[in-house]
Image 1 (cartoon, rainbow, N blue to C red):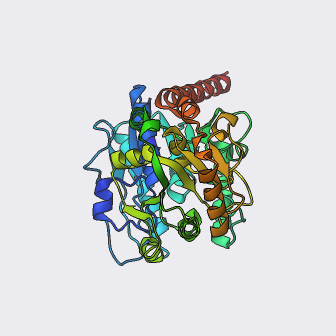
Image 2 (cartoon, rainbow, N blue to C red):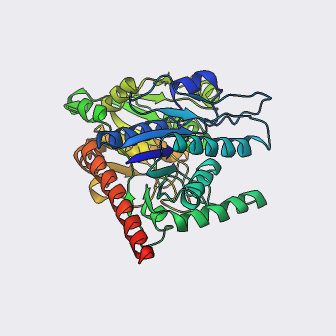
Image 3 (cartoon, rainbow, N blue to C red):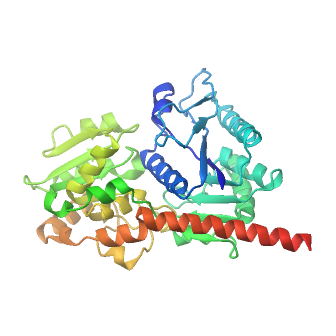
Length: 400
């Protein structure tokens, strides 16, 4: 099948040409790359169409272009143009991403459209594909569209209008893959669905071999430096852990990075790595005994799920996390939960896990078995085949 993957992908060339800081998501980029590569490995023809959004307001025009540094030589990436002017930015991105879909479809027609979450450009492309092209749309649902990260209902007239559009699209898609049963429950009961919490790349599987022998007294945080990810709370909690034989390693970048560095300036044993290459991140994950996800607790468990939890587990680390909804029992064997992400709670949990050697409880084999490249590749292909079969059956019934 020829697939249009409409996703907010941020490749190396985009990062060089546009100021992407506040809206940068490294985990999304990795997951998009892995899914596209696995689909390609199953002989699907994949193109990524990204809005290449810039959220920092500026009177600047950023023209459309194609990614020069592809993560896969046979997976092209096209970015829409951007005008990051307040009140115009979102409308422009939606319109230009939709135009990109139309142009690419005219050049070489698609068979399926996949959309990553329910932002404006994705909704517009999905609706056009359904109504005007007659194509099946598969939703990749990562974050609950109807509440924020704290599980609180979104408010505002414009947002309510967007939510109505999201609800209509949820009733119209042909299939869905989502990170939690809670998100899957928002879809109609009869369509093909796939629970996909994460994807473990071949590089991580290979690096994890004999990783237990290379583990060090390291606690690792990997992710974007934004308030909801709990990095500030992690740093404050670390201060009172009092374990000079352990280190806290922090990777990633974001709008709070400099403030976090200042906060950690006089704290012992904290190592900031900044943005690291994928091989270096994999090496760090495989070297850490404990991996942290001190995410802000949501009132609705399962409205979000951190992709890195699956990677942490697959690397052989013991995961400390706030609750993000019920998950497979085999995976929970490698997890210690915190009821909240306050600094005191983080410190208390870290001390307990270290002193009682809870970090020796891992779930590497289960994570790789459920979400490794072979399992996910087969699941993705099966989902697409079911979607195509359902659409074909609907067309035959309509013809009769």
